[in-house]
Length: 122
Image (cartoon, rainbow, N blue to C red; front, top):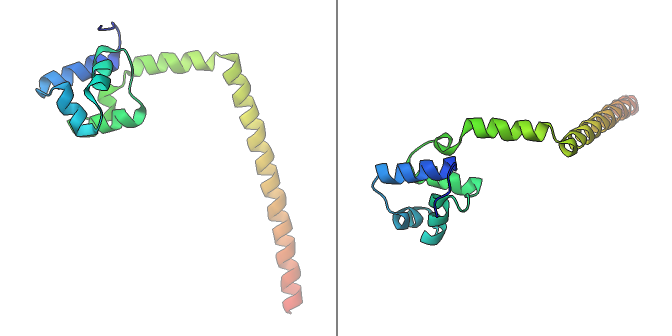
């Protein structure tokens, strides 16, 4: 069953047709069984990023060939508007600030230790 609007599936069908490759042949090239390739081609499932990379390498096209920039932008936008994502970003920012502060304190202590060691050596 072919699903409408799956950019990856459309691009995969197109490149297989252009290169005159069967699903079986692509599967052999990337080490995946034909039923999985069929699910990708029909849009029932999407491959992992590592599988997309292997497909692109096997078909000698850039990974970007399979990526719909507009859909990615929309997806990113929807995540930016998500309250959970906003909370997570806030927590990450706070954590990063805390780590930076600890690093500054560590550097100060390290410099004090170096000074004391240099006094002892003299």
